[in-house]
Amino acid sequence: MQILEWIVWGFLASLAIFLAWGARASVKSGYNFTQAIAIQTFLLWITLVLFLLFGWNKLNLLWTVIIIYIAPHLFARIPIISHMMFIGTWIFMKIILIGCKRDPSIPSYFDL
Image (cartoon, rainbow, N blue to C red; front, side, top):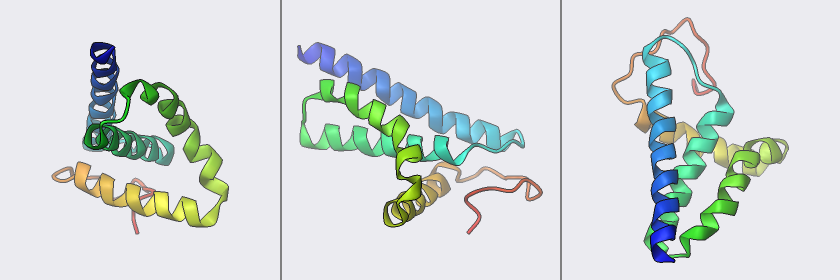
């Protein structure tokens, strides 16, 4: 059972790396990424780190990933939660995009 847990965790870690790499690649090529994708990437990374640090059953990631992909749309209308997610995502994306030069003519959700 633990092997299956690590397979699920490894697959989702690969997805998180792919999403972060995709954000970098789109910025480098002059395109922008959506705020929902950035929030989903941030929440996925946070969830994977929490499951790794606390040793929770990694099969629970299967239902938490569904919530992660719904969360930006559900919590967008709740001011305190949406602001906390936005600030956390902004910091996360600033770290992910270190070294990427973005075209200033393209508007971004993360220009504060």
